[in-house]
Image (cartoon, rainbow, N blue to C red; front, side):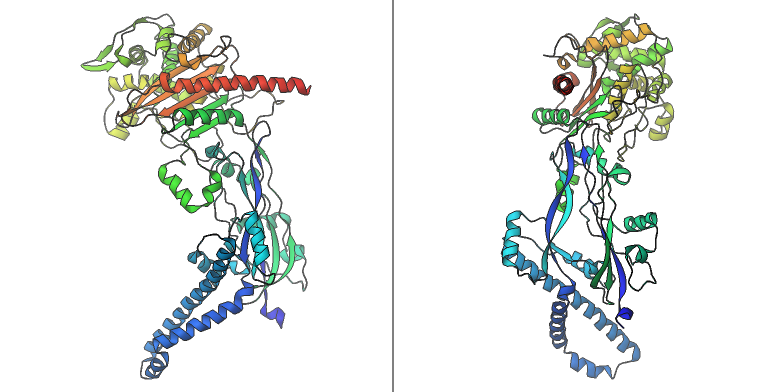
Length: 639
């Protein structure tokens, strides 16, 4: 008889996620035990029923139900049916209130014992205990993540036969706090497992294999389908979730009474932790970059990217301000960060005009077209006219006779206006697209930028319903107008130029140092050795005294030869500037490429790449040199 009144229910057990390490084996994200206090729902059924009976009696008295029952004899069938439906709905409502009242009393008891504040989530109680919910098999969590002291108080003050008990779950432990939060991402706070029906089975006393009646792959798919525990939301947590980090959930088979409450555990299968992941990040360099952004620009939004020129590995992807991924389980904290706009990964998703950091593309396009040579001289006054329209030199300066190297050193706008007009918008756009500035990078993160723009006449007609003008070409040549791309794209462009190629395939996974040299998906840059040398000489001059990027190398060893380009772009209706610096080093055998972006604050028009972004690149280079020496010494010591 008992077998006829019971069914089987499969409860999915969450699996610990895989650890995340930096390139040197430093643990960035692990798991820690969180001690929660839950209430055994099955053990509360009697209290639920008693509370419901009390509420029902009070409610009947309040409604004068006996008098109303007498009056029903004079009602129509439809009226009587409507009244019965109303009473049934009221009974459901009272049962929910009864369950909430009972659980609230248990929570009040805990608050007194633990000296801890907190309120009951009434909506969550209703979802958990709804007759349609399969969560009724599971205990209901009243208090999450208690401290060791609170755990001791619980054990000392709560009787062993209480329906309250301690359980432990595995939660993400972000060891470096807010560091690299945008890259690492976070998992959601929805940790409630769904409970599917177990497949029918003919065995009278089934073991786990027979009751599932499925092969291993089908069993795993079933469990994953019905489990939404630590759901990865963003960053590395999301993009490597299914492939690597997500573990294999386990399960328990319970017999369940028709009421939906658990009765007896019949069998179980343990969960298995996910695979560990080694990232390309160098957390020491990442922390140095973030410290410098916070120190120099506590009120500004900013980012720093550092790439390995050879492999395309992301060594640094820093955003400021950052957030605490461990607190993203708190709805209030998550909503606060979202409202502040902090969750946007500016390094990979932020769309900005590149300003003068785009000028190497203009130089390459002009050289490849044959419109200029490295020795071509252009007269650069403080103003350049296209028809009657004035196009100014930055800072109102007049540089006089300027060749390619000098243009890159002093970042002459007027030279680029002329070179851009020589090449034409089609040539400029084609070169920018050759370097991938209009298309997604190979970075594994799911958060792809939307709205990358390399302007063309077709784009302007479609977007602005206007024809193309020569002034648009001039603006495009200095990275302004409608041109928008991401800091990660400019970092990739810089690494590509450093190798003499057009594309860098970026990755967040550590590349095996013993593997064959990585080949990227681009093509040779297409310059002669003389042209390429002139380009690099100009970028090197930018990072020396007399160049706009001279602060990039200030105080660094003279033996480190750096190529750089600064940029300043107008944003926010020209009420503030963007400060850019891109760089790579060493010139002789490039290893790292850097892109720095600092967003100006409204009203600050003095903000610029050379003054504001270049010093950050300088600190990153200094830290990189220190770490390179440290790693070299460690290698020698280990031999």
